[in-house]
Length: 199
View 1 (cartoon, rainbow, N blue to C red):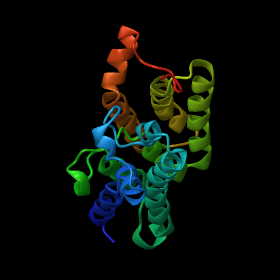
View 2 (tube, rainbow, N blue to C red; view 1 turned 180 degrees about the vertical axis):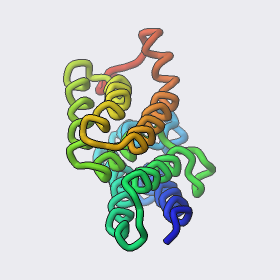
View 3 (cartoon, helix red, strand yellow; view 1 turned 180 degrees about the horizontal axis):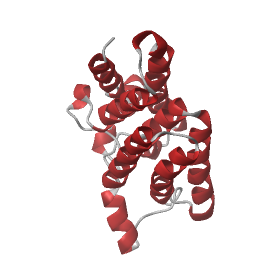
View 4 (spheres, rainbow, N blue to C red; view 1 turned 60 degrees about the vertical axis):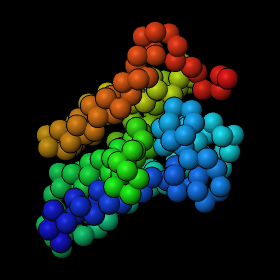
């Protein structure tokens, strides 16, 4: 398996938008058509269907994890480095942002990025998740929690032993996450971003 094939496979798996898949399976509205229009767990939760939101979250996280885990499982056979594994994860993340199967209209990538980080290192994933949980516990704002976790992720990747290539790839994911949250950042600056649970 060449590195190019690994990247293509990662992108194709990442293109599985579970917000859309779960919504169709459970006969819910297309997540592009309501709320923020973002095909992600937070927006699916706006339908009031918590099961659909949880399934979306798990599906989007697992696809990021599975891509890296499978690449790791065959790394000895094909000579993949840690940076190659992280690159496969980045491809899955990009698939989520720009899914081939759904008109390149993807989500913000928080759950998929988390799955990728857990695939790279369980300790790294837990540390970044800890940042998200701590921020959310204090502020109850999902976007701020995601931004805090994203900005912390490359620093934590370095602290948990990632080489500079892995840290660089994690940094790219973090910057893309910040970019995907640009509307949230505008609302935060305007003071109109809502806490989770606010109607």
